[in-house]
Image (cartoon, rainbow, N blue to C red; front, side):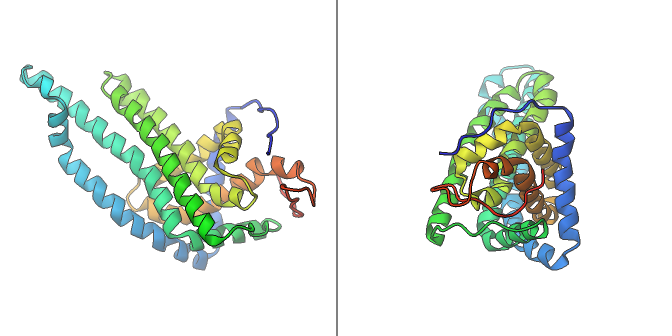
Length: 278
């Protein structure tokens, strides 16, 4: 089993380095319009699904807030209204947190051939792509669905915590959204780097070991992507670039340490004979 190097010390500049990977990914697809246009199709399909859900949630957030705060019925009108506004914001914020993560997972599943192609071409433009893993397509699909479910369940757990903390005065409306954006970014980066890391034989647990070791870079990349995804239609237009940026991040900051430990011909850990700049 792959054992990572000891955890490196994180530096504040790593956050901006991570943001830079998103910029590089967007620049890469901007120079290749054909790859960019193909990558828009699955993102648009997923956006229709999740956008409709968020609109529905926004319209009904007030009713849901009233339903979950029956204890406030006897309060004064001002206190009752304030509580239900906070509850509505917490409900919608939780929905938005989950929608970004599930949007990315669903988009990658729908557009697996599109985004696999983008990832491979990004690698080839940087010196060479790893060989396709010797795993049947059906097994890859099952693993992808299973990983999406596991990551989704972890996200739901965080969403419950953020929902509860959203009721804390001031902190719930200031600090909690920032932390939620960082956590969302971490999970989002985990999904966007999965294609490149899976081609290197890394399963979900091993991938998240690497993500935690470089967590500031990962959060910088993911949080910047979250910001773009919340701009109207940003999730559609940014998705191909986000996949390209995630591939560059995986190649240069996450995967090289595994490849340094992998000698060509080593059983269970094949060497990869192409350069990997840091």
